[in-house]
Amino acid sequence: MQAVAGGEHFRDRARRDAEDGFLEAARHDDFIGVQCYARQRFGPHGMLPPEPGVEFTQMGYEFWPEALEAAIRYASAITQLPIIVTENGAATDDDTRRIAFVKRALAGSARCLSDKIDVRGYFYWSAFDNFEWLFGYQPKFGLIAVDRETQRRAVKPSAEWLGRIARANEV
Image 1: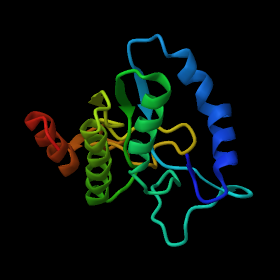
Image 2: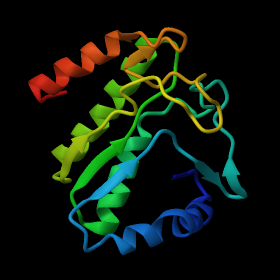
Image 3: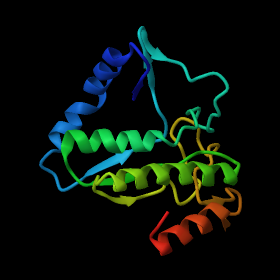
């Protein structure tokens, strides 16, 4: 959640209503899982629409992978717990955009690590193109494509790219 000038009150209220209770309850756990796909912006009169001209994912989310870094920083500040990114990704038919999204999200995670935030893991959502409750099989999140008629799987270039990063253990 992000505030532009004058939107801090609305952002803070939204955080309190949607996140803070869960973060407070988790303070004595072993870690906190962070799931993040996009940002919500708040201005002096409440929630703002996305900025003009922004790109959207197939889920209708603003393509803004930097939201992950902000979510990690906020969860860490509240809980003081190690962070595991349990879901992050982009629904798109264009695999080059998926790679760009993850590259920017991982860069934000790396900045958190540089600032001594204890980020212990990153799980991309999802391994396979999956069923989304509101949109069925239309959004393509997966690193692996699934032909719904034949059930054949095809590894996407984004899976190979992310696999190289995981094997090297560096962004």
